[in-house]
Amino acid sequence: MLSGDNGILQKATEAKEITDKNQIVEQTRLDILGELADKKGEDPTETKIKEILGTYFKEDTIPEDLSDLNQVMKTKSGEYTVKLSEVLDGVTIKKEVKETTIAKSTEKTDSYVGYYADIDNDGDVDGIIYADMVVGNTKSGRWNNDTGGWSDYNVTKIDDVTSVKDYVVSTKTYAGQTTAGIYKANEGFGEKEVLVPATNSSGTKDRFYVMTLEDFTNNSNDIFYWYYNANGKLDRQIEGSANDFGEGKQKTIDMINDWNNNTAKYGEQTTASSGKDYIDLWGAIQDGQYNIVSTALDSKKWFIPSKSEWSAFCEELGITSSNYENKGLSDWYWSSSQGSPWYLLYSQGSPVYVYSVSFDCGSMNCINVDGNDYVRLSTTF
Image (cartoon, rainbow, N blue to C red; front, side, top):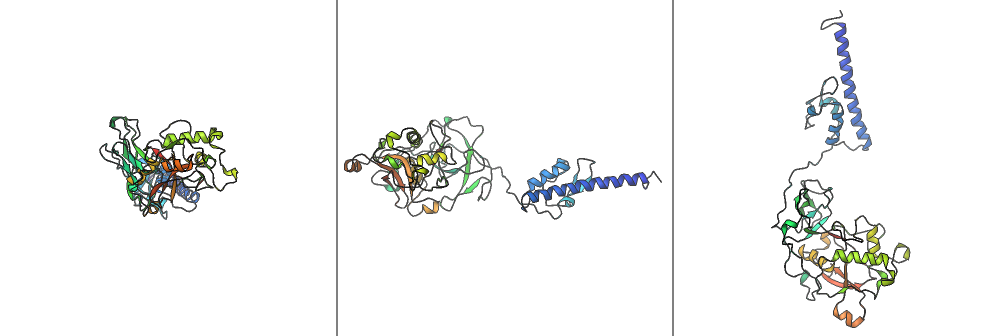
């Protein structure tokens, strides 16, 4: 009665095994239901389900594909065999976009203007590439055939390609993409691959200029003064035909330093407490989400583009007065370039103007520093 296959001891052992197995199954289901509760009813992902299963079942027995509930696993304790159906019956698993390994190196002979950039490889697209200094424009360019020359630019080409950083196509998933590494900002800019830095790059120089895909805002303001009280006091003017591509970063550094440290030069800063309708952009951008240049030149920080950088953005990406809205752009944007067109110098004495890109007119203009415009930021990458 005590021994043998049908003995009391054997039956007791089998009963205990059934109890132990049922406890593991029950605890696994409770953990899955707990995850469901934590997500307020949102279906758990396959990754999360596998993480929970890994607590109780041997990793090498957890199926890669959880859709076939007839597959079996072995518990970590007691090595009981459990069907997926016993723990997943009735559980809906949220489908995940699988990362596809499509990483490939960029070529030093191909232009990547129009591609997107994930600068820190964190899965968020930071902007769109509008200048490629390896495959650069080696002669003067001009946006929209501006006869006055205000929108001239020249992208300096880097001839020593060994000094330039290397990049690869991202394998991460991005909101709105169709496959891994593909991003579509809007209808205007279209669908392109996303570039990220190569981890084993031997070069150090940035290759690209990147423009954000959204206007800068500091929560309370979408449009800004350039520097309200600097009227008639500017002293870094350039002629309309001057090429200042590559100078936007330093111009931004200079103006932030002036705004922060030298009110006698340009006048009192206009802030949220000034009682004006808007605030100066130089103070606003320091409080935003971006890591803005301040006291030292840093290629990983954002800046207000110069007039020639704006012109390259417009021309290289084919932006006109008829399609700019389709690319998610507003009407007017500030540059970091102070204006000194000859007819303003002779007719109005001390210049008080700044170059501004006008998308509704399809041209570069000069406007007063106490006017109001939108702001976008640029960086090198």
